[in-house]
Length: 379
Ligand code: PLP
Image (cartoon, rainbow, N blue to C red):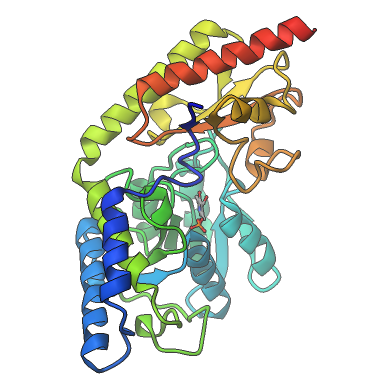
């Protein structure tokens, strides 16, 4: 049976070259990077080479990259650090962050004040309002704003937010899990203090990620008991996956501009063809304001909202209802709730990678047509 994978914002297929790097590291470089003998030194060499590769591609120093187990851990480590930091007295974030920021913020608000920023109707941060708030505050603020939203794809202007934060001496964290490896990112230009990334979103392995911490910022380790990662993240490093992540990041960065053009072409074809077949279908995603991989689609009530994802899955189309974390839940996510859509609508996220094709788009649209026709026949 033909199957298409349009759920690349949830995870991406691993690149075959990355599998090779991981496999070689697992079999050949099995020393513990903390050991002082030759096996350990070899492992340490691979670890530091991976760090240098990632740092170089981001315009960062190798000493500003810290390996973690995932994007969720990176976000937790950075946000929870604020509780113990004498440099942060308040957190400002948005109501549509990924749960690893949103729920964490809701938990730590017992220990440190958390405020939710005003958003424009498309879901991006309102820069004028942010500047007014920053100019009025006397607090030491950590702002946590995602680069691209994982459910609707809307992008924040991180360069301008970073400039504002510098002007008003606020710290900036960005959850860049959806944009790392998908957009050109240079930390010489984008003035974030902290950033989070996850390898499985850019054709790398699951269970590995990294934090960027601009010097001279520091954090207290979330996981204690070892001095790995210069004391910022205890625990023996997942070396093979880290080497795989560095390879995946290198590959993702190679033809970035061409890939972005291709993905936008693919998205446009999908949206145009779908709208042509179903004029009542709408999109939460606005093409020129969003990440090239995501199309959040609003299906009207003439589709069976409860069954739509299941029907697509049965016909070989993998996509999700909002994010992967909430796709199994009947309730709309906090992100979709924010957009106040009519209850009868069903929002489906189709998310693409450079490995998807226009033939797959056509296949998907055919399947949606079949679902619509089957519904008409049973009514
Ligand atoms: N942040 C965003 C924006 C995400 O989309 C995700 C995953 O969906 C995460 C964080 C969590 O990343 P991980 O799966 O590596 O924990």
